[in-house]
Image (tube, rainbow, N blue to C red; front, side, top):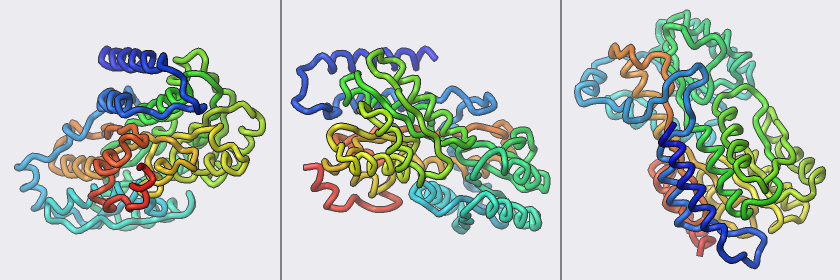
Length: 386
C-alpha cells in the first residue's frame, strides 16, 4: 500500500506540474510521452488490492514454470482441455495465444475453444462437459455472468473437472477442491489509467459520464472503482452521470442519453473498448461533438482499437491495455502447477499488468501486447500518427 501511495503522489506531482503549462489553443491537451512513460512505471505494479474473496495477488513471476516442471509436464496426460468464451474476440484471441504458447512448450496440442452466445448456451456446454468429466483435463472459462452460472460451474467442479476462470469467479465456486483460481488483469489499474488519461487531457476540470457493465463481474467492478476513485481526486472534475449495460450494443444509446441529459459533458469513460467506448465515440460523432467530448477505456482492442486512437477524427484518445497474452500463459501455467501438486496456488488470484496507451506510445504498447499474436499494425494506422 505504501508503494501504491508513493506511486500516486509521484503521478499527481507530475500532473500538477504539467497542468500548469500554457493552455493549448484547443479544448483538450495531447497526453505527452513523458507522462505516459511515468504512468507505465506506476502501473507496472498491480493496483487491484486483492481478489473478490480477499485472495492475495499473484503475478506471472509466481506462475512461471521451472525447467524441472516443464519436463514433468511433458509426461502428463491432460486429456481434453477447453477454453470457454463468447465469440473469440480480440481479448479471447490473445488469451488463447498465450495458452497455446505454454502448451507448445510442454509438447501438448492447442486448447479447444468453446464459443457461446448466451448464458443458456454456456449452461448447456457446462452440463455436457460434466457428463464426460473423466475425459476432461481442465477448463479455462469466461463465465457470462457469475451468479446465474455459479451452480453449473460448481456442479462441474464436484464432477471432478479442474477449472480456472477469467475476469470473475462464479458464485459458490471459491472453496471447491477443483477450483484452481481466478485469472485477471489489473482491473482497478485499468480503470484508473483510462481515467487519468482523460483527466490530464481535460486539464483536470470538467464533466464526465461513465458507461459500466451492470452484471456481476469482478474485473469490471474494479475498473469502475478505479475510474471513480481517480476522478474523485480532482475537485474540478465532476462525474455527472452513469449508465449500466448488460449488452455492449446498448452503449451507443446509453451514451446518447448521457450526452443529451448532460450537454456539458467533456469526457466519456467506458468499461472496455470494443462496443462500449466505440459506442460512446459513435454517439459523440452522431451528435456532431467531435472536439468537444473525448473518450477512453480499458482494453486496446487490437488493430481496430489502435486505429481509433490514432485517428484524429475519432474522439477516442487512449486506453489501458492488459497483457492478455500473459493472462493466457498464467491460466495454463497455474493448471500445470496444480497438476504437479503445487497446492499453494489453489483458489488463487492471478493478475497481469496494465499498459496505459495514447498516440505517443501506441506502437510501443501494441508491439508489447499484440504483435506476436496478430501481427504488425497496418501502415494506414502508422500513417495516422504522423
